[in-house]
Image (cartoon, rainbow, N blue to C red; front, side, top):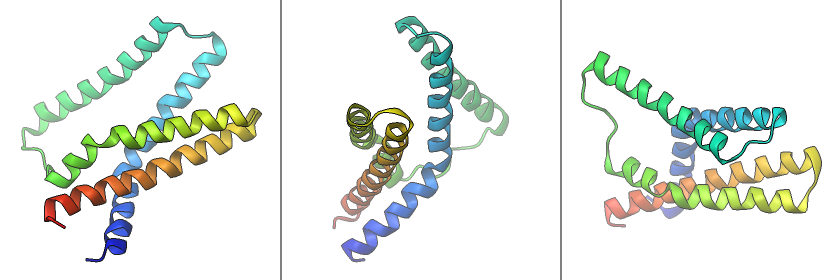
Length: 139
């Protein structure tokens, strides 16, 4: 498989496998933003909101483990490595959004920041998955 094909394949994989997680990210970010319009959050509120989100995932995972009692599927090395490398894509995307916010004001700044962060996340996530697959295959 050529490098170009490998990258394109994993860009598609990044979008497909991340759509639910990305939609959740938008949901939780929108929740934070809307709550912040009611009252400025302090550290306690921010940690409480993050804790609530984490607890929701813990409850959902616990329920599925108890009700399904099956071995998890799709635990291959490529996806595991891809998830472990999320720090790069999330960090760069967040940094780019912050930079857009510093440079652009108002709704247009939010639009550009959201677009830029999303695009950088998708591209870097695809690259991370491609690198993980290449490493696994010894390419």
